[in-house]
Amino acid sequence: MKGLNLGCGTRFHPAWTNVDVSPVSPHVRICDVQKGLPFSDETFDVVYHSHLLEHLPREAALPFIKECYRVLRRGGIIRVAVPDLERIARLYLRTLNKVLTADAETRYDYTWIMLELYDQTVRDKPGGAMLEYLQQNPIPNERLVYERLGEEARQIISRLRENDAGKTRDSLRRKWLNHICSLRDRMRAVLVRCLLGRHDYNALMLGRFRLSGEIHQWMYDRYSLALLLEQSGFGTPIERTGFESAIDNWAQFSLDSDQDGTIYKPDSLWMEAIKPITE
Image (cartoon, rainbow, N blue to C red; front, side, top):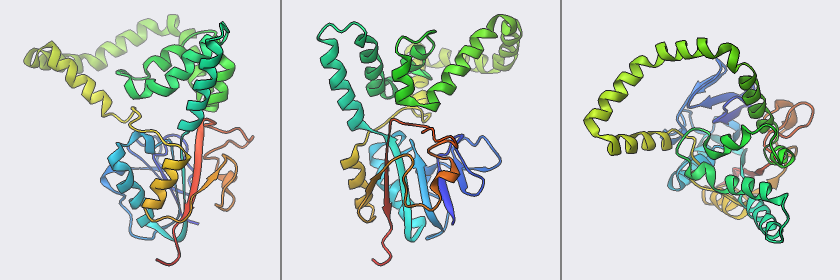
């Protein structure tokens, strides 16, 4: 089986063709999916991408899924994972009803679900308000955070707490290295700020951040995602789980789950569709 893993980040398998705009391994090939996929027609048996589609502008989604269709062989499978807008909305409404009945503990859950709804759409700095929330120690509703974000949250929180533990010991060395490494960038920033003025410079930096790929540019539910796949030419889409797939031996690749069965992104909507054998 020839598999293509798009926007893989740190979740990839060496038996697959893995691509990302910022590769983290020799097993990952650099590629900006918005510029098209650098592969011939009908090359792969499976195309997979997880939490990539929502980072594309709405108008770029259909051309991108059509590119996935193009590089798939007839009878091939596309598997897509995105944040599940429907589940977020339902959780928001349940939490809102609880917090309005003076359930004091629910106010933390309400704060978190509002971050899930909006923060990655409106943030103006890396990590945004969600990162600030995860920096709390302890996190007041840690159970819900882990339930929603799974292993990804555990990794982020673990790194944040490790950094806090080593902050005093390494602070002077880190400050010196940061000073040396960023001196040229800061000099350039000062020059650009002088040329543009404070307002235009801040607008430039905000625009650069929002084009960096971190922002969510659209959200999907089971209806809109299925419609997008059908508009691209795929057969009837089927909603899946993190474990379930029509892809042979899916679990062995550890893309949606770990070897112990832990789902990496439990807040996901998973959907698969097949490229028709005949058109």
